[in-house]
Length: 238
Ligand code: F6R
Image 1 (cartoon, rainbow, N blue to C red):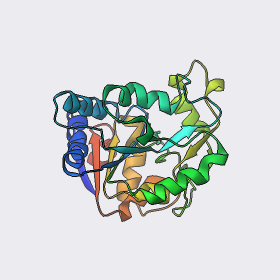
Image 2 (tube, rainbow, N blue to C red; image 1 turned 90 degrees about the horizontal axis):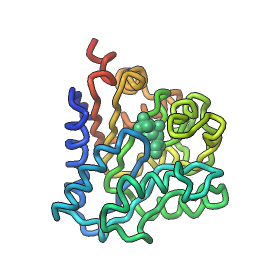
Image 3 (cartoon, rainbow, N blue to C red; image 1 turned 180 degrees about the vertical axis):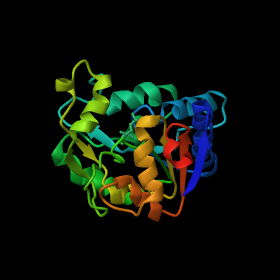
Image 4 (cartoon, rainbow, N blue to C red; image 1 turned 180 degrees about the horizontal axis):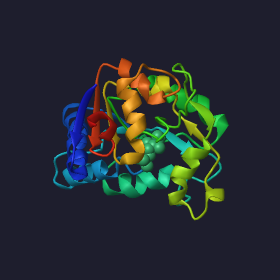
């Protein structure tokens, strides 16, 4: 794991975007693994800028998102499809049919798994939950897990209620890539910002890999870049 600790969150976004830009510039048909949440938004902004400057194109890009809520329509304001459209897709020249998110429907799991198995990601962006989840693999998930329907931890629903008017509106379930799928990427870039991530980051880096801290699986991936602000890194520094 290469660990980068930076004061400036804008610099984190910029540095993280460089890994994606490198793939987009060098691969003929890049396959990107994408995430929602607050962590990657700044990075997506840098990708949009690079597109607007003519440096990169998404014409031949295929994307796979980590997860989607169950029980809300894809065009719901808080669906992960809407999030991706607002923060990236509508600003670039990506072809609609090349955009893949799990459908928020348990029957569609096998279809998504097939696509994931056929399309190894060149690069995957990740955030991390305050409980150490990556994608929606909550603590206790097997390292061999593939795509599945997960019941979200109460803490995760609490963390995400800021996007809804009330906790009762936050979906209880999601379809998510499993940990095994997340690892099926040639490179992984993880961004963690803020004090709420400090404990999970400390455990991921300093302690042994365990399903109790799902992000610790990344220790066994050969090509991971971790970007932390000083708050997320605070327990490592002190
Ligand atoms: C998002 C996802 C989640 C988030 C994590 C951190 O697609 O799978 O694992 O990356 O919950 O969320 P933020 O970035 O909002 O702190």
